[in-house]
Image (cartoon, rainbow, N blue to C red; front, side, top):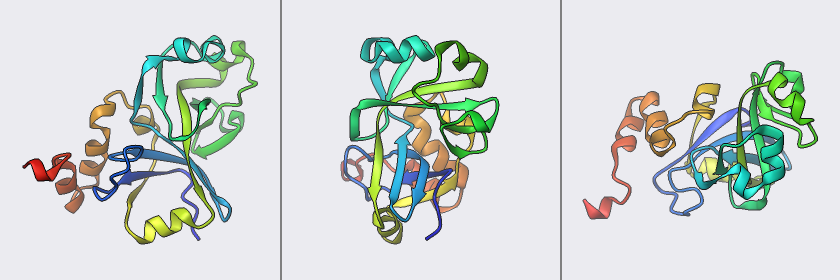
Length: 180
């Protein structure tokens, strides 16, 4: 088993589950016991301050994102850190999860970009490997600019287009080909 930590999973068109349809997921942890990640291209339509005031006090207000269907009441904070060792869980380079007990006055000193996610995506032991064998996901290394991209509505297509080749064709597919 190769770890998918630090990779982006781009949902194949075959995934119809609304939680993961056209999702782009950052994998923050993956080992033989399972995997954890956050869907990075799903705005929640509400602010951090409205949904989780204590989190807003810590990181400031901004848009809340839907990180996945697991524990949607829990907030996962993904940040780009000044120093990688400040991450509670390091996904790649200097991007990882901010510890929820980080004092508010240190957040700005330790991070350059930050996003809050309600919930996360999770896989049990071997589940992600099975999904990879079925080609449910396209995999590409994560980078900070993609993780903190502004145009979330187009992110799935943008990442596939950047991969080129047949992925570019997938990126141009309508959401529901039967309506074509």
